[in-house]
Image (cartoon, rainbow, N blue to C red; front, side, top):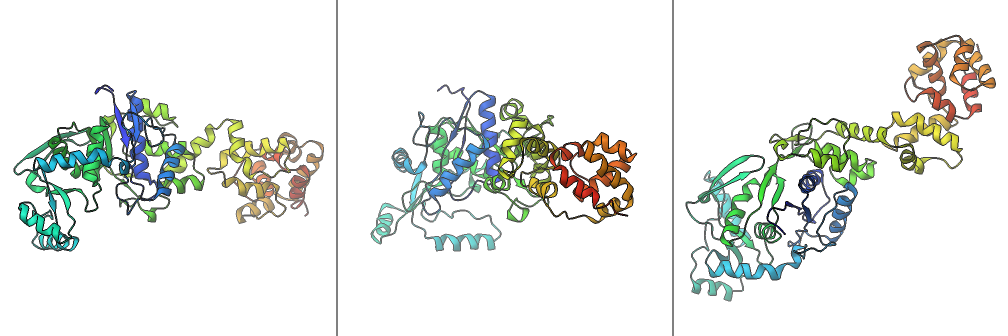
Length: 465
């Protein structure tokens, strides 16, 4: 594979459901790969056995598939850099660990979790940023042997060089500078022998020839560590871009208190993947295009220069907007497939077509159609108070004339001529009597869907003086 080829990746940890922030990260990496005719890789970062759950591995793949983010390489689609689960890559990592130790770029650390916690608290109490104090950095061979003889299992720490300035150009935030003395020696291998995030994430990006990594800005501070590590291993780092975090309408990090935050929850609530992708595309990425876009259209419009630094606000109202746009864009056959699970088997073909034509402009989710099924085909009609008042104010003669005309011809023209009214004076009381509401579907398809005897009964209800 040429080094000029754009290769992006999505590397989730299977410790939970795919939430919207990670879904947006996956989308942006997918779009960049498609924009540049490159490749999109799915890598499962499952070295932390205590947090990994196999059910989430399958769920993550299902969510990405539902969103339409097809990966070119991954656990189920082996490529040149397999395997794509980090738990299966230990044999690739071991020589690199040994090299770092041999070159004294890494050392065993015997500090317990309690000792590390006490050190952290002491630094915070002294007003210093917490970082590893270097307790095991200069242990001699005899001291290490003594600790091993006590049965203590060490982690492996990367030895951060002193007085170094680490610079890189972030694709979103521009030029970044960090001082190595502000970075403590960090763990690259856990006590149980598994690779830690800083190591496996960076090394796999290099070994898999990932060219661009778009990830949340909470990882920005991780980048200098990973740059130093890859430099020590003489591996080429990708270009990093750290995108803004998703927040709720109140400006706080997106969480359950803001409503549904996982892809599964939105899917089960009835939202279309196109609606979800269209909103995510516009969260932290500006575009002049205001219409509903397909994934290929999003890829064509995706620009790294349009990624924004300010926090991106997730609003359910905006998701409902894109869902509504998706509903309106459905072809008649697709709209029928979407609503068919809710439709009673007793409806005729004409009633089905008329019902869908009537309610589609008035619903956002398929479940919204259930209320209109009850209104249009149900026996008992519940009236909103303003609608009941409007029907009564129209007068008995209006409804008697409408009911009489219905027996001859069931269309709006005949009813309008029979009542002698037009505009709001005609439509408002008629809609109120037929639906119990002042607003809703267009009356023409509604009349075509509703059984004629039911229309007549609802009109005659107000025909008595």
